[in-house]
Length: 218
Ligand code: B16
Ligand code: MG
Image 1 (tube, rainbow, N blue to C red):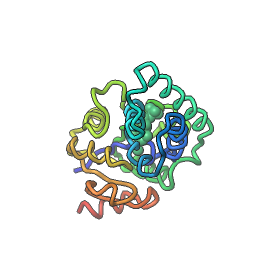
Image 2: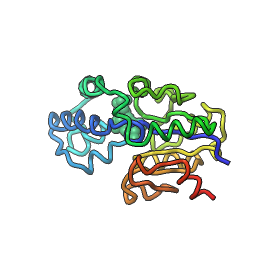
Image 3: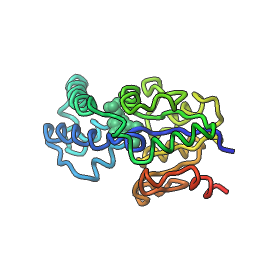
Image 4: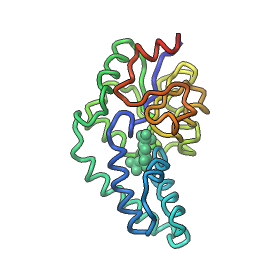
């Protein structure tokens, strides 16, 4: 039986994927990489330096940027991103998610966050969601980011559950791979073509309810 839930944050709990896209688009323009929706999708769930690497490779300019230059670009992106998220309020929780978290807490499930974002504690606090979570995995503590399973394994361990007792929720293809490889049940939220490896799919966060999840598990 399922006893816990491990949540991705950007694109699942928080409407921040658009802010990541705005901030990375500026960096792409600066290095001369053409920005498009496909690139924005590929960056979802990928950590900061990994995302920058993809942008540089996409523009065939990777060799122009050494470690110091990459650090400077990543810092610039994060400074811009921090300005965009500084104004987040509980109204920026994605539709239905506060109600969903409330229903899970009432039902006694344990919950943790498996976000690649180093800004996760700040965002969770801005959204007024801290009270729902027993743990937020520190992505800096991991050997590899999504699609590696390490983050979702850590998210189950942080709430003292075996992976098979946990459901993971994700909006990115890399994240669904991570959940599946961790041995958890995966729920994809978004385009079912992009998230075709998910065990269960919902088109939007507003569609996700405990009743619907239970109905498909029975
Ligand atoms: P930061 P998630 C991920 O968060 C985002 O999807 C991804 O676009 C971002 O680059 C990554 O966090 C790192 O974020 O720069 O704030 O540390 O979807 O895993 O919650
Ligand atoms: Mg995400």
